[in-house]
Image 1: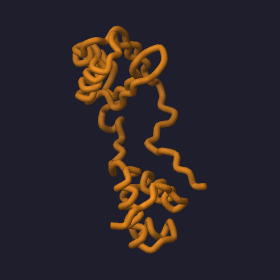
Image 2 (image 1 turned 45 degrees about the vertical axis):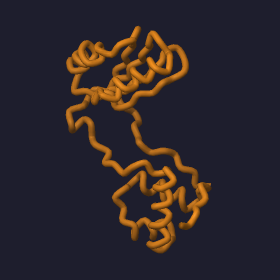
Image 3 (image 1 turned 90 degrees about the vertical axis):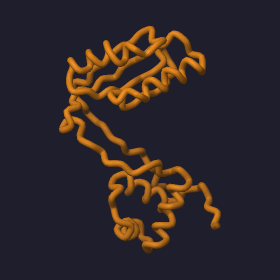
Length: 160
């Protein structure tokens, strides 16, 4: 088996950038855009997948059309920051489909959650129902998005 370097070159960066903008691009079209023939291009894509640079291929859905119009960010403080307590919180939050992002952060609170729901009434029910069942939460602050200025899944890829 051929051993690949983890070092990425300009072509690898270009491939990653092209795929994150359109993961349905054909290998032939991708190869043309990065100035390779199809076989070496496919080998590079497979290497990028194998080495973990590409996690998965997904469709980016329109939340508003799917009746998830309200976006809210929630700061969460927990009473216990032991590894066990944090793992329990993490496990419970992963089960909440309304929570689309959750990050453990440093600063004045412990977690920052991004939540997508239909409307304010649905959010209130979520907060007083499913979220209230999570043990160890001491405080939350919610920030409701009035207008989304920029939202992207694109990771900046160097082209040096």
